[in-house]
Length: 169
Image (cartoon, rainbow, N blue to C red; front, side, top):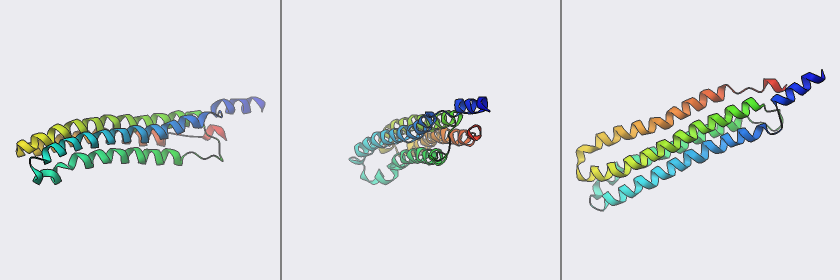
């Protein structure tokens, strides 16, 4: 009986929640950083183009809206990961590592997607101000940039379903 207790303590050490909390933080911090960069960079382009053609400003806000959605992906993952963490029950090292990987997946893809949306939004809006035919191409590129963050969210959700604390009972 003593060896069983020692074995389960190896699977469920006291520092296991640290990894889960790092997953929560990684998801929201990195995806929000990507969203913030995308919003700022695209906003610079909108401001620059809007001074010459104020009529396009409302259509030019698409990159800003898409960048904001990236932060929502991180929020969803953070809420789901933190929902699996309960201070009244044991938490396995396996769950901690899974939650860390889950948070990093959505956070890092959110950072990459936000960066891409910002660059495309800035240059695309400025180009759209000069040549209105570029609008459809800009939107398509923005959609493909947004999908990068969505892929990270999907992988994050799949990883999150694999977390288990059954070894800690």
